[in-house]
Image 1 (cartoon, rainbow, N blue to C red):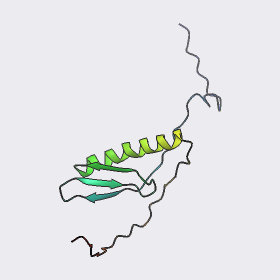
Image 2 (spheres, one colour):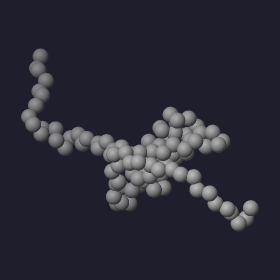
Image 3 (cartoon, one colour):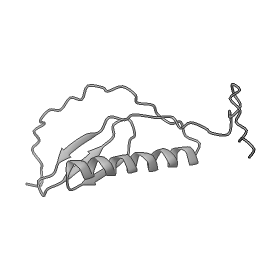
Image 4 (cartoon, one colour):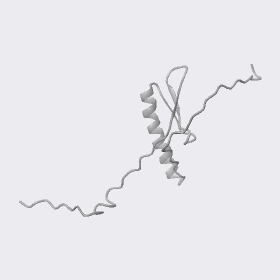
Length: 100
């Protein structure tokens, strides 16, 4: 029986396997009055998702982010890297609409 041939030279498999870069994006989960959560990704304007539970909203956010990044890459736009969390400030703003 012939022993299998394995090569352990440095760099031997370079280029054969490309490691995917892991990016992290901070999301905002906003509870909806009708139930569920709207998800916003501040670093990716226009990247919005929804889920009926926190788990579903988070999973849907991952998919939305992946699709958003894929779209940016297809249009040769820069890919924002948001590897750190940023403070998010919220406040209540009162308005008096003219139509009421």
